[in-house]
Length: 142
Image (cartoon, rainbow, N blue to C red; front, side):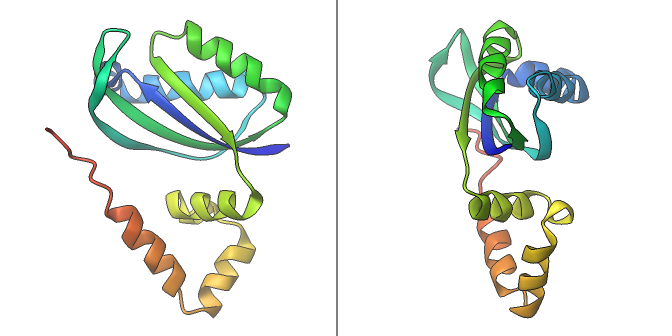
């Protein structure tokens, strides 16, 4: 199993109309490819730099998952056929970066080794990651 980070650009209108259904659709695409979802969350909703397939706005959605490499074709094909997913980008992540990002998104799903290290170091690294993560401007309405 390989660690992956997926950034999916979703139709923000459909996400606003049916939050749960949109996420379920994306998770269904990934699970059909054999992915095991570790953490996921919306990242940024806003105006796009340029029009993509008639969309001027979109929601960037982050997903961290493990999957055999053979599932990538299924994800690509399913995303191209989806009317919710506008674009996708999936990259391999090394284990240390994968664990750090998962713990930043969902501290409850962090590996026990990373949690123990954070407690030993006085959680200063975790506070730094949280401070950087909270600094993302999710309400950009330019």
